[in-house]
Image (cartoon, rainbow, N blue to C red; front, side, top):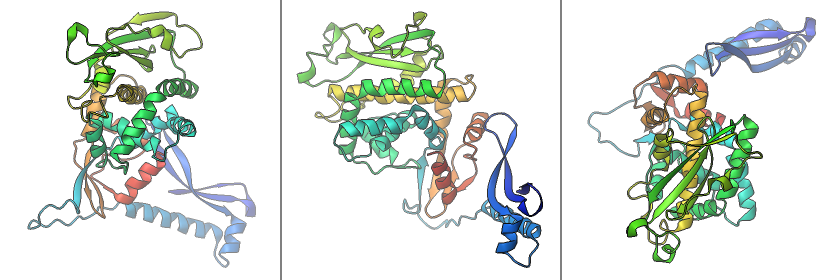
Length: 386
């Protein structure tokens, strides 16, 4: 850290500053750590001491404390002791500090507030959406398994499975609104290239209750009905909108374009198939956990809503990384970022370094691949990304 000052004489203002590396490239910038006031202010607060000497001492003290926070940490391990989940347990989600800013970019918080104003519920819709979207990227599984897995994220969640099912029903009812707001918010935050629009239609199989089978008939008399997902993407492959139809009804994609004006070209493509499949794929146990829950059509729609948000989030990360790294590669690196949480101490990295993880650090301005991250530091990183 170092001192900077502005002005002259007794009105000279003194600041303690630090340099840091920008998220992209090798350039550095400066931020103010502490404002000390004018020389007159310092002299009044510390009579009998030279103001500049006091400022230098204060700067040295803050530098010492910052270095102390980075000192090696000793974790005592007993070779005779058995592993205890109370003392240590694996956690997932080094990607969460990385992805949270994209939740803000999409305006998920505002969307959830608008939805809550129209529905009576007490559960944390934004927290559940975050857990399910991060889970779709980190550990795609059934909603029950995802909820259980989310408890091992560095953020965790205290939502009940009942809350999750209620939230999924609300998301299904508000799916069209969510898509429109996502487009509006992301367009406002940055230009969406909609001169060319790509579209893709993919069939998925689900188990549907008999009450719903009339609406979702199976092709060729299959026992599992087909659900067709139509997805629109802009010229960068960023998802724009989706719709769900029974497999025996063609998707009318033109009716779901959330644009103020028509695109120049409307092109069918398969170039993004692997990306779509990686986040929309249905686990074998994914939608047949409970006869009265995940076999309902509204929860099928909410499943694709979660996949849509997760795809938009990861595609945005791909853009921030320069657009050169494949989505599958990004997802693989995110899933690899696991830690061992030592109770009362912090997080021990349980993954190997890589050039892509170095880029993750640049985006968060944090050292997510440090050998050890103290609990207090991790909480500060998460708070900074809120």
